[in-house]
Image (cartoon, rainbow, N blue to C red):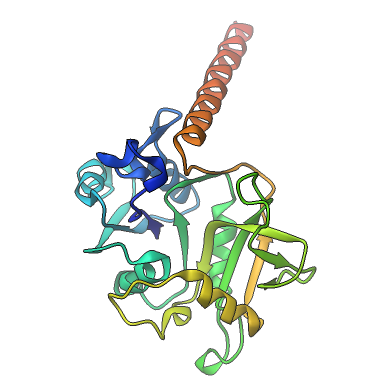
Length: 246
């Protein structure tokens, strides 16, 4: 699932007429980077939730055929927050564990590894044992120095403790994590995660690669400039290699 229902208040005025996941970096919309990454990891069925300017997302991406995937759309009359949006989409996601990616981050994580983590979630009759979530954690960015959760040496996450890392917005979840939520109600993800952490049922991994919370116009512009510079450098390197072959 890709989360794409946020209003993008901090990104205004860019998001007054364009949903944040459609903002372009490095020559393509943020959400297309995610779709391509998921497809490369073998994920070809993707649910996308939408609220603010959702018709623009559907007009741009359609059923996903052009990108080599199948897209299903989960409409929200009003944004339901992260947990509420996932709960609303459960009929489309099915009964097996699934992965979720925030539509407003940029990350070069191994999505295949996240899929394998999803497959390992849940165990035992009635899920009385096993993990309910697996979160990808990153180093704390300048705008969030306090972090979110503590990752211990056994790869389990805790609401308290130090040092702390920041949740990347990429995670794997078992549907049972959302079982107590009523469909159609707004609900945040953090309280559900903290409860599951207290029960020892949330694991995590530290991603040391590139990750950007594309939450402001300045961060968007910086990421766009960096990706464009890398693309130009790669093209020049390829041209030099081609010339050398002759």
